[in-house]
Length: 37
Image (cartoon, rainbow, N blue to C red; front, side, top):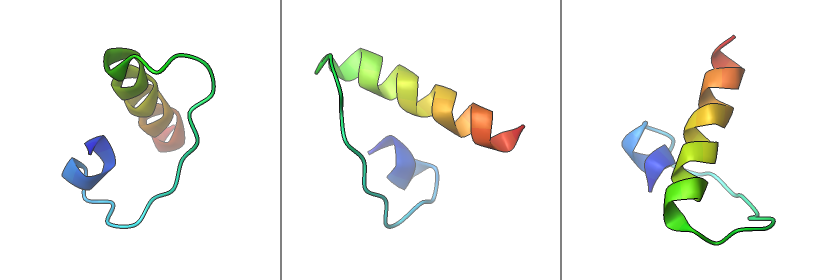
């Protein structure tokens, strides 16, 4: 959902560890920030 809102139409991911939706969204945003650098 976060990637769709960011404009990424096709993305595949695997969740390792926590299934807490807040943590998953936070990790996704962190990953996008790391790609930007």
